[in-house]
Image (cartoon, rainbow, N blue to C red):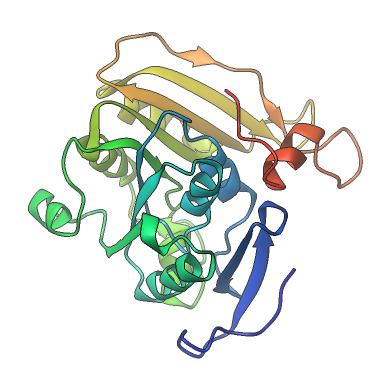
Length: 261
C-alpha cells in the first residue's frame, strides 16, 4: 500500500506510506530513489532470537531494525544513518509504529573515526548483533539518483565495504553475530573482510527462481569464532513461474515467520 500523505511532522517532501509485515509496520519513505523492500525485511528477519541489543549501520528509514523489533519484544536497537532526511523519516516511523522507546537514532558517517563513532553512540564491544545493508555499487560505476539520500544509499566510494565490516566488528560484543546483505558479486570482498575478524560464517545465497544465479547473499558470522564457513541451501524468492513469492518467503514478508538459517 502506498499513499502520498506525508506525516505533518515530517518536512514536506514526496513520500509514500508503505505497509510491511502484513500491515504490522507502516513506513514513510521517499517516493523516488532508494526504497526499502525485500532485502530490508530479510535482513531484519535474520536477527537471532537471542539478541538483546541491535545495531544497524546505514539504517535508512528503519525497516530492517523495525522488522527485528516486531519479532523480538525484548530487543532494543541503535540505528546509525548519515542522511538527515532518512533520520527524520526514521524517527517518525519509530513513533508511528510505537517503537520509539526501544530505538535510538544517531547521525553517523561510517567512514568517521573511532572517537567520532563512539560519540554518536556506537559503543565499542557492546552490541549483541550488528546488521547492515551497505550501498551496493561503486559510486564511479553507476548513475546515481539526483537526491542526496538516494545517492548515498545506492553507492559508496570504492573499497569501502571492508570499512563497514570493520566498524561492525568494533561495535560488536565478544560473541556477537554480524549480518550483512549484499549483491552476490560482492561475495569475495565480503568474505575477505569477514575472514580477518569473524568466524563461523554462514552464507545464504538468495535467488529469484530455482536454477537462476544468486542475486543477493546474506552473510552471518560470529565475532571471535574460529569455526569454519558453511554454504547453505539457497533461498528462492519465487517459484519457477509466476510473480508470487515462495511460501517460505511470503511468511517472512507477511511477518508470520523469521528467517531460520
